[in-house]
Length: 231
Length: 228
Image (cartoon, rainbow over all chains, first blue to last red; front, top):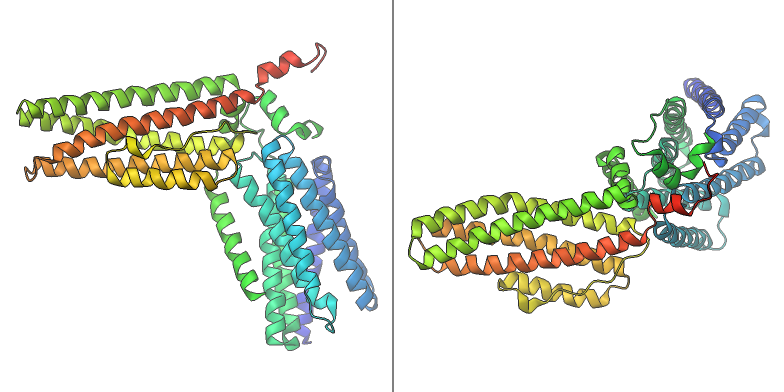
């Protein structure tokens, strides 16, 4: 790896960590953890893993990578479930559809992972499939929000709007890496990190933004988004 | 896998585009209509306005065909023009109302059942065929929401067809090329009435479904006194 590339990756890595700290600070400052508990846990998990790798490069082993990616996948799935519950809880018709869609998405992810031919190392093959599946999971939640015309908290919307494009970009990069070969690993890694930083910056902006109250009577807001009182 | 990634990217772009078009203030306003008694009254007011406009169009077209029979051709054409101007304003309103109904049908928890359209009631061939298609598809759709939405889409499309027919007939009558075009005007008047009646029926089904959603004042009535 060239010195320039290494420097670029280090800079992007530190920018990502600083942005994650800013996000977590914003989440606690604005008390947004009360309306989405999994999100700060996910950001904190990514931050801890990044800090560990930055402090001790030798810790970045195959096992570490496996544990890290599995944790992220589980947390993202929990995040999708929590967002679904929060956004759809006041709308029984939409909630029923959302449950069905989530079930189908989970089954599709499982099938995609299980359909990897025997004899192939599963984790590198499975990762793009799980990522693409998770992107589709969030995209499905987003599509249902649009279809059912549901009012959404800007924080929840920002999470979905940030994660869907990033996961798709990431999947495309992994796919390109598989097609073009391992020699482009650094470039793809840098591109992925930049895409991740862009998502983090978008989230940081959404977290720190002082939102206006919804343009609706308080009784309606309480009914449609009962968890808003926690803020 | 590559196709899946490409498909996902397209889905993402479509979602971003739709999100860009979405207005959060409008979303809240629509839920206010769906969930508060004030909103229900606003919907009924809108429906009455549309019905009034429909009566105006009907009167203008009826009078125009009567005058044509009495051979007051110029007066008949003037009235037809006036009727067309009203329908030009009325049809987009009606189409917007129907689009709104399709949207509200997604917002209710359960939709009241609706009947399929009756093809025999339509005089214009294209509308009769459309009603046939609607009738067939209606049987294949599973949920009442889907049936309602499809019915509303067909009605909405039907108003567009009517506009085109009336515009064509009006232009041909004005150029004096075909006196038989008055039959088209009679057919348009008939189908306009039928489409409006069917729209009102859909609207009633929607109101029934909205009525089943507990409104804010009812909610307050069911809550204990010390509730904040």
